[in-house]
Image 1: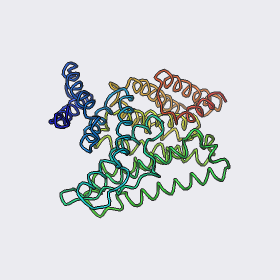
Image 2: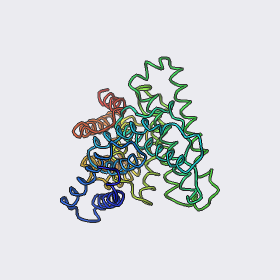
Image 3: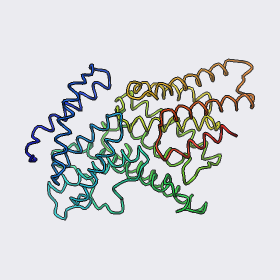
Image 4: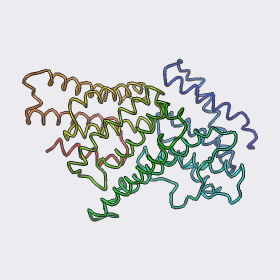
Length: 395
């Protein structure tokens, strides 16, 4: 089969992506026979074009990779991530062409799309990245005459976000982080350096850096930037293989940041529904782990956490069909919020009694760990976080 035999592939992919998104959102009834027929057609095409190491074949596989993100099983995405990254390296996409040309810009954009895909898939699974930053020499996307400048700038901001996210996972959440950075000073320097990178990203790519007032007034863009910023801070400061025990100041910062993140994520979801992808679900479950840890550690104000739990359950309700774990998390968070409300309206507040409060928090931790275990959910790098919750429960 030649590459030309895959004519119409983009149209088929557009139909399948649209169909899958609409069924996941509940806008149309699913048709298993239709879905299977189209998927088999796409998979057959992919298997045949893998042998052609061309930009066009890589682009088509990437489109299929985007579809795989909507699948409940992450293993398809993981497999395609391996195919895409190997092809990218084989074609030398990790190094820019010397001459300036339309093909050079196309190559660069294709590489950064694969790079972002690799960071998204491997990061959500807590697995090693295939593309190492130290071996990448590719210019960021540049706006062409026919491009929307703001869209290209947002794309570049996303690429840089994924790069920082990857470095945090590599240096903070790597299993051997404590072996690489042995002293307390070395560990704190890692955190400090990465925090500076986060602040630099925010200050140079945030809405404050744009002169276009239309973009600044876009609520979805505003919410995206702030939620992305607080997501990076959560990833940096939550219990990790580098820093498993948090001091009081870091714990309070984590609790405050968790609330800010979920607030802006909710605003983003209200303006533009979050994607029905398994990496997004994985990120939400990871955040739920952070929230439960902060609650069990008494690192949050109970009067504020009620609203944050409500916002979180609103977002989780968007995924109840795609991920059954979200239903159990909603039930747990609703019971926590109810208990807090009843406590605050009761003159003899039982949660003000240290022993009763510890029992209450311990119960939350035990139930949450049970939910995560039943669904085998959570990225590998969340193990220190879950272990921290377990330690609180046992103490």
